[in-house]
Length: 400
Image (cartoon, rainbow, N blue to C red; front, side, top):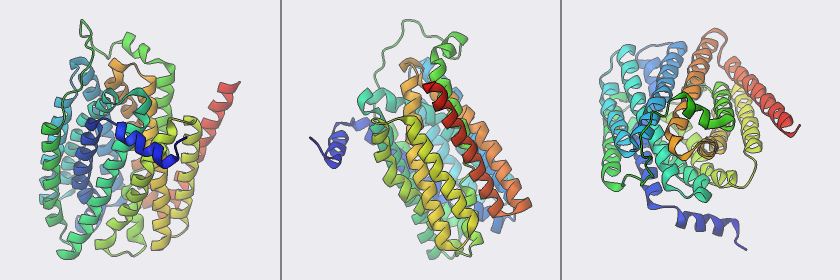
């Protein structure tokens, strides 16, 4: 009988090389993105003089646009039967928008750059996730999504670390750091372009539009339940920009604030793969419920105090919650959707999550400006509690 460690090594050996390539592409792009995003809320508030409401609006619009665009990129990748071309275009657009942050002198150009950057993310996300599902054998799908997510998050860990080092080296020169972020973005595009082949798919005799009503009905009630769960989760978890602002409230030096993001992503990176494996062996609903309880704990810790040690603890719990739930939701989408509609399935899943992210981030910014940081995190805990109640009621109903 294999131990947990030997089982993990066994699974890693059998994961196809294409999954590793996609993981390292994500790693490089996340280094590029997080070098900017770990500093952007501070850049907006301290250099451009914007409010928390404006930060929430920019973040909410950007992230929701990325998720809405995934509907169209996912549907198009299903219709064409080609994933790689759309993924390359999306990663290229993301890389080429990075210089706009460096030259921005007002909120308008930051918003434009953020929106274009997230369009790139939206275009690449659904076909990339569909490529993972196409390449990975069904019995390793949870592990494959978990591995790609772990490598993605390692990049999100290294990006803020680079940002801290360069901010210390260049005396808080935000714009110089933003220029350096262009390099790993272009490296990601090159690796995707030359490092992976288009997955072989069984093509239908006649290509049809996956967005037709009969195809949407084929997605089934189990899939639409996963969509609803994803939207509720997102409502309970507003933009991570507010974690950065909470750290600033605690008096942490500007150059060191990205270390808060590092703490979150370190926990996220370490936990995503093991929880991905665990999702192949236990009830998804139970794991989702535990993940929400962890998020409630994170919100309460962040609400109570803004001392740096307390903020780091709260952010660490936030990262653990993400590691438990992110790869799990992707696995649930892949498991409940027909293979030829996976791109569309991921797209609609992200549409619902995107609209919820816009509402959550704008509401968080409003509460922050009107009632303060603590109230915002207490409100997040209340939303989490509502989500836990909904999950519990659904499980009771299913058993009944």
